[in-house]
Length: 114
Image (cartoon, rainbow, N blue to C red; front, side, top):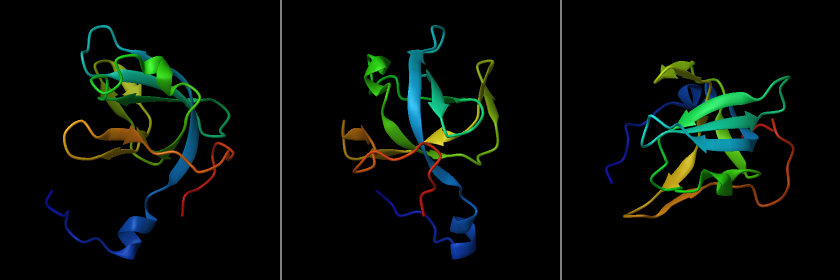
C-alpha cells in the first residue's frame, strides 16, 4: 500500500475523533454496499452514519453495541437520499482483513481520541 502524503500537525489537529457506541446497524435495501448506523456520541441525539462496508458484515447486527472511533466533524454528506453525519474508522489490511477498531476497555461515548 502506498503511503499517503505527509500532513502537518495542524492538519491532524482539525480532526475530531470520538468514541461512539453503535445503537443500530441495518443494510439499506436499495444499496448493495451501504449500512446505515445510529451511533451514540454522547450528544443530545444519536448520529446517523452511512458506511459502504456491507460486504464485510453480511449481518450488520454483529456491530450493535460496539464502541468505535468516529470522525465527528466531517461535513455531512447525502448518499442515496440518506444524510451521513460522520465516519466510522476501520482497519483495512490485505485481502479480507477488515475489522472495527475498539477501545481496550469500556469508555464513555463521546470521549475524544487524542
